[in-house]
Image 1 (cartoon, one colour):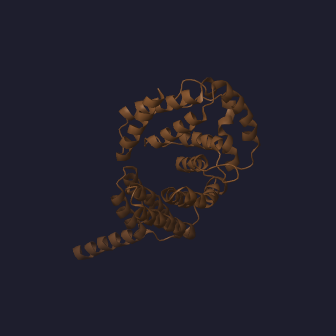
Image 2: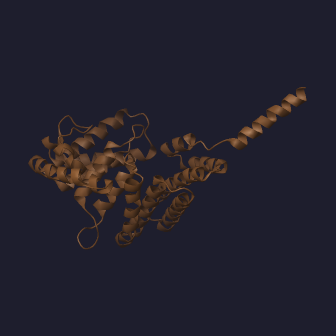
Image 3: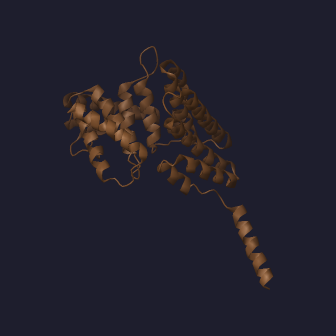
Length: 299
């Protein structure tokens, strides 16, 4: 009887192991903690459990996301090694799309390509830009993914860093609106100081006074209401309610401050938040040092 019970327990254990579906809780936590080596190991475990195309796609886009961070951690002068990691990330993203088309695969394909271009230099970044925009357009238009702070951040970076006019499609005004959306969709569990720094730099560079902001936001409102697609609509996100909006880091409306006043407010907010934030990550300290330097320079 005991032998029969033991065999039954063993059978049930083996069956449950074989039937187990991937669980990404630990992998996502390790990613948030920037424990990239452990995260990769955990994802490979989950990959062995993935049986459906959707499950495999979920693993693969996470591996693509991981590769961006692995490449970023490498020294800037080791460009060849960076290319290898970003190429690997793009391959994971493509495999994810092949298994089961999904928004996150297109996002991290775009992000790996963007990092590859930035590492190679301006001309190569231009070469990657069209494909990146196509991927991000799918994310926000076809998949209607509007709550991904990384998507809006990459879109903002793309429009901010590219030249405009006849050379490329860069547009610094649209970049700021996309970055506003990135700020609104920040996950509360992460600090993301790089978002604050980028947004502040974009605002400081534009340098509109409060009066000009009020006029321009009102113009943007009609474009916001009249745009047909998400990608077009969010180019004018600053025009929501003609700028009569109070952001989470401010006690006054957007129309009641200048670009540079807002830029300083953004940096002051993240400086204060950093002091009390419990879930700091290793990369946060370096970005905060840059923010401190910027704040001192601007004040």
